Image (cartoon, rainbow, N blue to C red; front, side, top):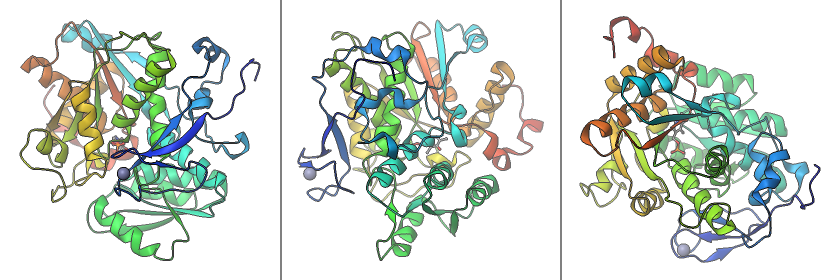
Length: 403
Ligand SMILES: *Cc1c(COP(=O)(O)O)cnc(C)c1O
Ligand SMILES: [Zn+2]
């Protein structure tokens, strides 16, 4: 690449998200030994690097090479993930009299969801560490993404998903040559099964936040939002939160960009809104103090498969983002998601995942309640394409009344 700057990783170490104790970033890690909580990567952000260097770089998430953990380029396992477009939803903005309504379309990633970012990073790091195979408990999209990146890396892939997951997710894993294990229950039951299957420890478990690098892939959404909006930021970002890597990652990115001096030091950071499925809303319950934490929360399945995460290990980290950003959490019903899918389809030509529909419906509700103003600039983070969810929503457009 034609640039004066050395394009290598500036990673320094990992640190415990709870107590800050540091760990090596140059050997495989899982949860912190001190607190059994997620580790987060830290970089040398005092580097003298201009954001204008980015202009000439490739249109993938790897354009932020210095702030990603992979040591050597030969270990990068890429299918072209990231640098997805930010679309202006003018028709909906007109309909609801909104000043600015944007949607970052993560459905355009390889394998149809933003999980591609995290798994590209995790599998690249697995390759760096010489791992021969990976295992993942998943609600669907993460498993498909892992299967694809493992195929590209020549690694064995074992995907553990709920039996009720739409066929399209399972099928795609088979096409990538993965082994698929079906479990009765939700993702936490899959996690227990994965642990059992991997008792000998031959496979790397790339569960959400149990390995530190999916977060680094997901954080590139925050870098992109800033860069694509010419280093300004929206007033509010709505994100469909399951395990929460995107929410935590985007906020981490904004902090790194501030430390780098790439964002104006007195910029107003966006309010971060975590949107969940009413069928499984552990974060909403904890945020509004209806439970001390999600450790005993029981969720029901939802057509937004990615949101069926009853006991997220990153709960504290998510709550901290909501608190620091003056954000909130909100639950959306199954019926509302169908309405949202239909409205985004008909008005904007976007066939989004139910998770993406949920954030649009959350916007509508928050506009109505006054927690979002029509004058706010609003960014919806649509995390996936609707294609693989067809079985969940088949026929619904027939009898749903006009949104
Ligand atoms: C996994 C997933 C989510 C939730 O992402 P987290 O990082 O677990 O919060 C949201 N939407 C879709 C489409 C997903 O696949
Ligand atoms: Zn700790």
